Amino acid sequence: MMTQAPLFTRLDTAFARFLSRRAKLDGEQKQIFEQLVMQLSSEQSQGHNCIQINDDDKALVLASGLAACAGTMPLIVEKNRLYTHRYWHYEYRLAMRIKAMMGGAGASAENLEQNGGQAGVQHHYRRSRNW
Image (cartoon, rainbow, N blue to C red; front, side, top):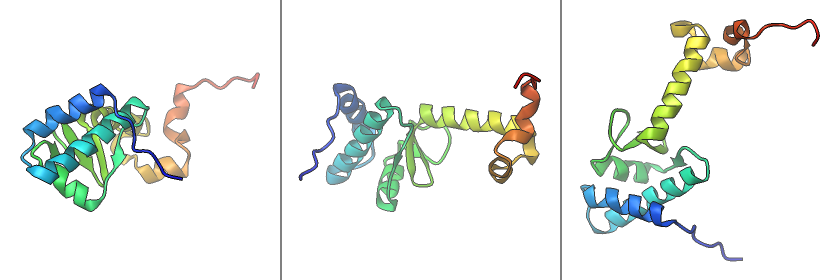
């Protein structure tokens, strides 16, 4: 059984072309970059906030001049995940709010996992005797 290539919307294609025209890449690199951005746009329209990329794709995206590991570039690379800045920023803000609810600077991802997030957020919910 042959798998079909993903179908991209006109928005996915237009967004990818918009960025690829501004990328500091040539030829085949620009085509690969455009495919990655189309895939990212398509996944976001399906409810995902990022896509997984390999080390070669990561290097290519960073070389485009349109991506960074943080900041205000249109694309953000974090570990081996590619985000649009908007979705990366949403995820970052959510993480900071959770951290603040867990007790600020002393909160860590390990603490959140160990206690299921209960320690810092319990005070936001009233206990009911009817439960």
